[in-house]
Every structure is written in C-alpha cells, then in structure tokens.
Amino acid sequence: MKNLFLTSSFKDVVPLFTEFESNLQGKTVTFIPTASTVEEVVFYVEAGKKALEKLGLFVVELDVATESLDHIAATLRKNDFIYVTGGNTFFLLQELKRTGADKLILEEIAAGKLYIGESAGAVITSPNIAYIQSMDSPKKAEQLTNYDALNLVDFCTLPHYNNIPFKKITQKIVADYTKSLKMYPISNHEAILVRDEEVITKLANGKTD
View 1: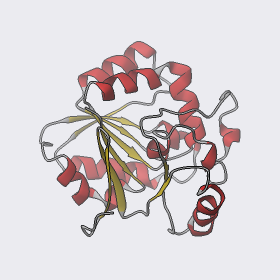
View 2: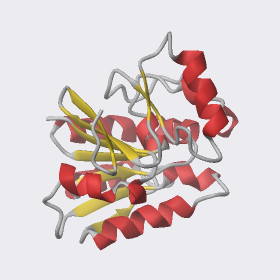
View 3: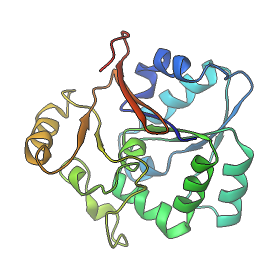
C-alpha cells in the first residue's frame, strides 16, 4: 500500500499529517536533509525536525550523499517513516540515484512505509523534475544525466504556489506546463495525501479539493 504525504512546508500542515497518520508516538523517522546541504537558506530543515519531535517521533538523520549504501539501507529499513526535506531537487535526485538510495526508498514505500516529502522531497515523487528548473538550479547536480524521478505518482507537485518569494515563478511554471503536464500546485498550507491510487489535496484549515 502506497502512503505519501506531500507538502511545501511541513511545519504549516502538521494537523493534516496527524489526520493522515495518527499512530505516531514512539515511531522513528529516517530524516533525509540531503537536498538542503547545497543551499544557503535551510531554516526549514530544523523546523521540520522540531515539528516531528513535538509529535513524539524519534528523528534519525541520514544524509545519503555522505553515507554508504549499506548504512542507507539499514537506516531506511529499521525506521518507521521516511522524511525527505526541501532544498535543491536536482542535487537530491542526483545523490539518490548515485548511491542507489532511490531504489531502496521505492522498495520501502512499496512495502507500505509512509513517505513524507517536503518541497524538493515532494517534487521527486513526480515522473520527471524538468519542470522545476526555473525554481531550482540544475547546475548543482553536474553528474545528473537525466531528470527522471521516483515516478511514485502520475502528477507533478509544484510547492510554494503563490507564496513569497516564489509567487511569480510558480505562476509562470503553471502557465508554461499546464497543457503538457498534470500539475498539482500547492501552497505552504496545503498537502497532497496519497493512499494507493487515491489522491486528495487538503488545506490546513480543513478544506478538501
């Protein structure tokens, strides 16, 4: 069973997460900050970590760019959830593919493990991440040979829709790709909930699309 919680800003949608997954106390999370390690602005990493800990979860940090495949595999398998933070989507995808962590994550999700994707972590669940080039720099991933991503869903998540400082660029991405891609734009106060083939977009105030 596929369980995905996709968002732009995890700390802003915590109530939606606790609705989606209520069995949290004492559970462990593999927390992957890799996308943020090439960025200057990284406040969201600590914010996400603190939000998880406030829910009673134990956070185990795992930077896939610096660990061996055996360590990555062992960490992913032993923990209950997987959380992938925001940052540079292209660098994240490069490191997931380079290390083989992408296949391990897909295996864990296929086995029913909950995946939480924040911003870049949500984008990589799409079939291909080329659409995000005007928000993220592909130059930070010089070893990435193609933009095919995890392909967990048949749509493209566009985070931070209409949120400062991404208001104009997210509107342009929607305008540029709306005819060619199945685009799901979400603001910082929205989340996409995926259970198998059921996909629901929710606002943090409780509204459902």
